Image 1 (cartoon, rainbow, N blue to C red):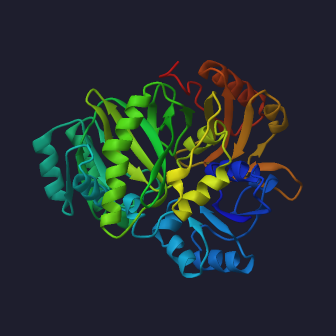
Image 2: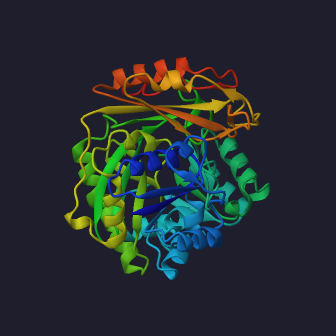
Length: 422
């Protein structure tokens, strides 16, 4: 089979790494890819949101399967364009991708499906939003309705902080058009878990769970990021909670989407809060998480490619996934200054030493090769150091041993990934 993966981050490196191991694969491309992906796939200089060029390339190369990593191309209609060109695409239609593209749409669907979540209200007028916040009190959650690169949510500890978030999102438009509407939500209390299910439009198959670390500093301090690390499986997410999540959230939402004429195919990422009353839905994403994907892929024993095909072809009902009896942990290395302003172009050395640590796989996110062959950082999140081991403590020790083998003065990482479980 010939496969094209779309995207250029750590998630896409993990997907390419897993797909490259499939005996079904004959050719693998990634658009645009990165320096690490180039070791397992042919990188193609096409942007992830250049829908026409991606479809034209897939048609020209007779691609059997296109796998979309990030959310933006899906919300722009990549799967629809592929369908029109008779190209199989792993990822939801534009209508189904609204589950990530609009948080208000997600809440409407979840409410119709009876999926448990936070109390919420939507606002298009900032004054009305602020008045509601004052009436509700804090802590409270403010969300930009549209896509904001993972930065559109503010958990406000005070009313003043919440009002300032509304002003930033709706009046200053720090997230552009994504902030034309905001949601103000109840602040749920508990532990967050990222849960993933493969979906074929009618059937959902549990894929796995991970726990992400969003804040930039040790002890969950500092501003939110795209993700500083993750581990899998999270001890808090028991088999009973998994089954409850499938029964009360994932399957009812899948049925509601089908009822609305927008059946969901792809991977459904449910952001959950594990409360004293059980799992509650925070939000949906319509793609693998990053760095959760890396944590899942190093534990997956099954061939990933047939699973993706089964989701595309409506054949998940007879499918099963097998996992290695291992724990995994991913440490994300980022450029100094991230998530604020950061410099690009700093050189990274020592990845060969890091990769020699037993159980470690180094995933690239924001990297490129200079003309002289040196590896340089090109983004904020740059590397994901993943380790799998019989215990979480062993996975943590291996990941940080690999981190310490890397020579990159221009980068840093959190030193406490997995602390909740450990």
